[in-house]
Amino acid sequence: MAPVIRNDPDLSAHWMPFTANRQFKAAPRLLSSATGVFYRTVDGRDVLDGSAGLWCVNAGHGRSEISDAVARQLVELDYAPSFQMGHPKAFDFATRVAKLAPNGFNHVFFTNSGSESVDTALKIALGYHRARGEGQRTRLIGRERGYHGVGFGGTSVGGMVNNRRAYGALLPGVDHLPHTHNLAANAFSRGQPAVGAELADALSDLVALHGADTIAAVIVEPVAGSTGVLVPPLGYLQALRTICDKHGILLIFDEVITGFGRLGQPFATQYFGVLPDMIVTAKGITNGTVPMGAVIARDAVHDAFMKGSENIIEMFHGYTYSGHPVACAAGIATLDIYEREKLLTRASTLADVWADALHSLRDLPHVIDIRNIGLMGAIELASRPDAPGSRGYQAMVEAFNQGLYFRTSADVIALSPPLTVTAEHIDRIVAVLRVVLANLK
Image: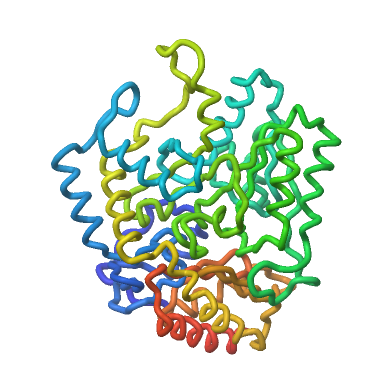
């Protein structure tokens, strides 16, 4: 039964993103407040947040430290222009972010979202090669089933078909690597699957096809999140790094989801031990409270731009709200919470509990795969022959009605709770899932 909506709000004006609007407005799911790892609905029910909002509320909901910092900042300095002017918090926050990244990543370019961060990183890659006298390097390589936001650049290198099909040819000169999902060989893997490192060789094939000197960058999610938590096979990311090094190609890690503790390290690059040339991030950078994103660049990438006359703008790119003072205040308060509560490594202490809990569901009807890494997990369901995605949607609605929220990608249940989750919360997530999945038709 659909929840009862108080006050009967008018839902017609809001054109909702990534939502079947007519279906939603016929039976809306409206959230009114949130605290800790729980949302509260407008009809007064508590719903456990099994996906950290949209992979972004890493420190849990309702953190007064962040809201207090935002309130103070609005009074002190509500806005400062970001072109040819600055304010101290942007520089302080950039320093704090850079200290979390691996050694040699000392430069941070602020944006307002993951989508903007991706497009920024792609433009930096093109500008980097041009600054070094290799302006012919314009080709960008993404990956099938990749998600890199909704800008034209991110949509072009992205590989989720429904995100692309309506928008024409998109950017020219873009190619894609094959995805790494292999149910036949890797179903029910814990952590990194054993089979698939050889798929990185497809990059060598693209080099042979296009010529290495035409390729500017390769962008991948270390763990592909929005398509259903695809964990990289053992050795795959290392192989990509080796091929990029051989041919002078920049490697960009899209860590919009994996950044800020999702795998038990500040960034996935540290978890996997593979250094890209740029790290793209957003979401957890402010705990989802104020829109913000960032590109963290290796020194060599940044320094390539810092040549010529000092009065010349090195990169003609930026946003009205880059390094917004309120977002910076929220971000600094967020990093303080992460540090004080050791949240950036907490996923490593819960990873085995998380894995055991998820994999306990493998014998339920329609479950064809379960995969996990850090505090990310996915349960893949067999699709109905006549209605792909409908089983996953039904599971999401039924779970919400029973007090659990999670994201779905077609028939994949994607789980990634706040880093403040406890073993008891994990038990509750699994208990609801067990009931819901057992009753799916």
